[in-house]
Length: 270
Image 1 (spheres, rainbow, N blue to C red):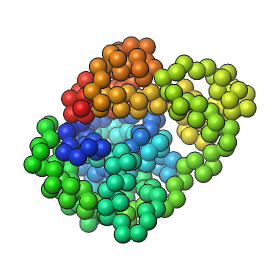
Image 2 (cartoon, rainbow, N blue to C red):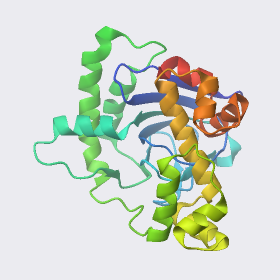
Image 3 (cartoon, helix red, strand yellow):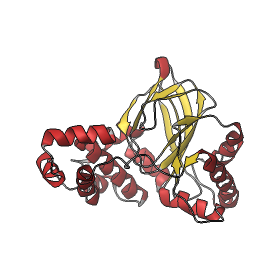
Image 4 (cartoon, rainbow, N blue to C red):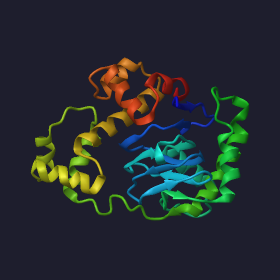
């Protein structure tokens, strides 16, 4: 089967829409955004910090910012899904419009769940995803997104689980990476920052984040590249600014994570 993976234009800033029909397996990775998706056909399985995921047609999958997860087709057969990614600031803005009291933190409680009442709301929102966003679609799109996010509150837990068990030493190493993802850094430097040996650092990273330090750095660089692409930067400049060797290096890792090239992503993200 040929991969059919695409990002679509969306009328509202801070929200990305993606559809996929593929047998492709995605390695462990993270997103800076919240994701809420609906499985349309086939079976999807993945490892998640919130538990093992097995999702079939009609079930929802979710992801929280910074959450490590992977994904593969059950039985090697194609699966299809559609997903909306919300930048944290965009989701917070929508929730602020909905909530009548002070907001609590938002975290998806389960990586997979069923909710019949959410189906129609998701369909109404995703209907506005297209190859080209239309100005006159903004108001109905806002209405659909507000209704969708209001319902998502039923699937949130007030307290995020990730990072509560993160030790101070790993947090220091992460902060060094997050401060400048594109900057070259060695394992020795990160180990010194955390106060651990190199081997202890690797083990602690995998135990707490599900990623090695090198894999975490790549995730932060991909996230930075996404931001730069959304701001209209030239792809060659994006590659350099995000810490990749060149544009082909960026493309290789971008495709590995999203299934589309940076240039295809740029068409609808800008």
